[in-house]
Image (tube, rainbow, N blue to C red):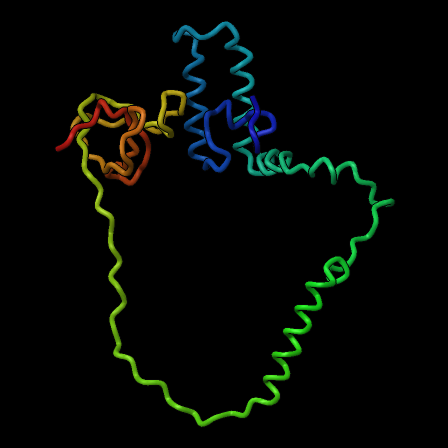
Length: 206
């Protein structure tokens, strides 16, 4: 099923967001193709799904085709699409549509101009010197640490098995917990800077 910003469902088939990077697109494509391999008991419509995934990857991995595909979702509103430019009445200036507001703005502007003309400059009084204070120090957030207890635990792009794999994490590796555990998944950061989601049952406090 297509979603807003995804007219043909290419992003949905790969399980990625519309702002996904090229690396994320390639990783998601490889994961989806592995799920449809013959030795993994694929569904009956595996051939059709495989062709759809190939088409999605072919479109999204080409910068020119991807820009054209993203532009398909930028359609005009129904009212704008049905309007006939030849018969549409020209828009009136805002000051004709809102004469009361225009009168208030004009009166305020004239009052400010008159006040500026009659105002006489006074003696310059230097402002009192202020003590120089150092800028506040940036506070670096400190994250809780977790240790991976499973062997070859999947690192996914989102909180759920429906999201593509971003890699695997070895047993005993330490990660930073970026977000509290929700629905059995934890948002973590690996030592090499990669981020993703790991099933919370494979994490423990050091």
